[in-house]
Length: 346
Image (cartoon, rainbow, N blue to C red):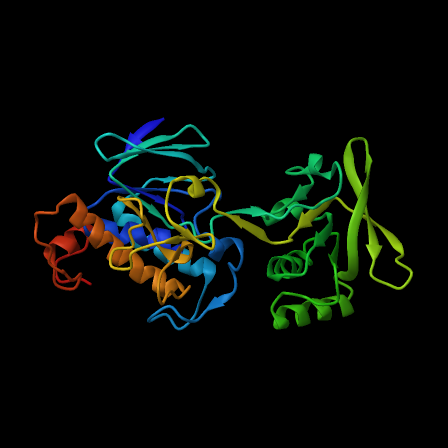
């Protein structure tokens, strides 16, 4: 499929989503490409139900609520989202436009590119047990997309971070049995969540073990159990029956093809001019956690600011001879029209 737009945004996290909004206010069309199957980036993948307290005028919201609100906010601009695919190549054309190709065969021509990929594309840290990957997507999962799929089953969760503990709490009452196996007695999850997990263990709703998966058994081509080496003096082994195995060892960020696009990098981050957030490659910008500059703060709030500056810079690059004025959504009929609100609305 081939399409074109003014700006391609790489990354559908909160900063990438808000970039749609800021570009839309400038009258610029954009599309989003993201490696994950759903918009939201780290907010959805790492802490969808954890509270966030530092969004202006929003005393508290979860990661999922923040993404839902951003999706509502950018809806007037109808930016297409091409998810579950990565940008494999980026080519600068003779007329200074760009052509991007994705892993799913999408080809996009645009006038500017904004990289809002957080720490890069995230891939789950895999369970290193020989041949167990053949069950991936059938009985072994690195993400929970539909909790109802796991209802009534013998579940084993591997991991001790927020995702592992939160899903253990969420699925315990729906599973036939649930066992969580963490490598050590130390958890990386929120203390309050770990306390709830231990209370559920005392109530007999979950079993918490400490050890590491080393092997598995199968029957009739189906995963039937995993074998774990326990964290005790004897290094004893335990066979745990399993219908579905959920693995939450975290996500590994990788810059991927971005490293090959000729931009100046500093410690695996993209260097930018903080007056415009343009990279060393003209027409390519970087906002959010993936960029670095003097005084950089890795906050969602900072990323939102960067999108506004980048949008104005891109507009100026497209129309260098046109004087730019700062307009406000509270008073500008043009901006209100672009937002689809009545004149005088905010």
